[in-house]
Length: 167
Image (cartoon, rainbow, N blue to C red):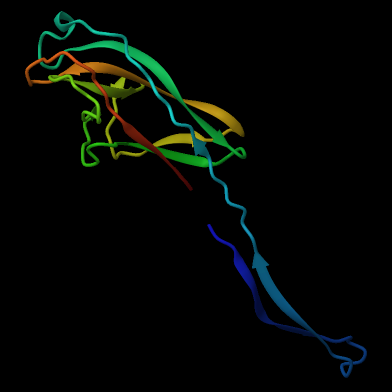
């Protein structure tokens, strides 16, 4: 949203019924300023517990799911918020599996993000609903997911971008 500067809309002419020669001309102008209403999302970091190779023995298996929240702070109530997630290192991905981030050394395993117990669909927006003034938590969970690639021990890292849109 943006502000609209004052604009001349026209002129109103009025006069008393008893004396039409006493005309009064009044210009009409309209303008308004809409304050920006932006909720802020805090950076969040989450670490999964270490996992053993036998817990991820087969492709498609998962382990060590744990919950975390992303904090959203809104300046006022009743902002209709739509949220979406994207993989920071593979923006075209849609499957909820985070591509290895810089510093990842493991193989055959990725981090999978979940919302409401189901894998997220990157790029697909969902309604957070109407905001509350102040801080509110956006709940997620993450887990390890075994891929078909050979399992290689090391660090597993992934990064996602959470975007808020307003209506």
